[in-house]
Length: 191
Image (cartoon, rainbow, N blue to C red; front, top):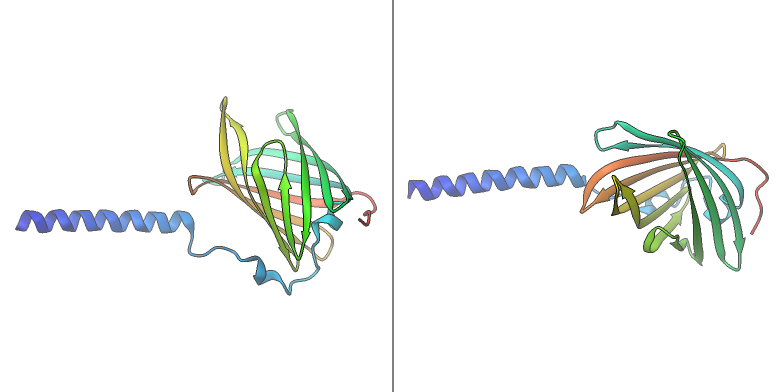
């Protein structure tokens, strides 16, 4: 009987450790877009990204080490309820890449987006000064293609700077954080 109790005790303490680790990896609560509904200034991505925008960013691994820095030159246009956002990435190692987003403006703070490296559709929601975009992306990592999940949060500041923090994960495990600051470079175009 003593062996059985010891085995149960070992199993439950191991399980408690696993649950504690899982809690630490996932966090205690998720952010909710509605929490920002009263925040100013109001962010409508179809207005903010119309015209020319420039951004600077970095990717940090889950340990906080900066793995990549980049600059993004963007041109956005709204036509027939769709924001087309052409992004040109210039990385600190000299590499370059492009992505063209097609973001359908659904109304009531709802958006659906697609791009060449996005799996399915990106789901976007906005409220107040915040915008949240959730999507899966095909990403080349060490010669292989991984499908990773992004939980992308943008917050418009009073001076027109847009701050973006995105968590990248796979199988629910955080791989790293993307931090980006956007700034308008020319007059905004009204859609």
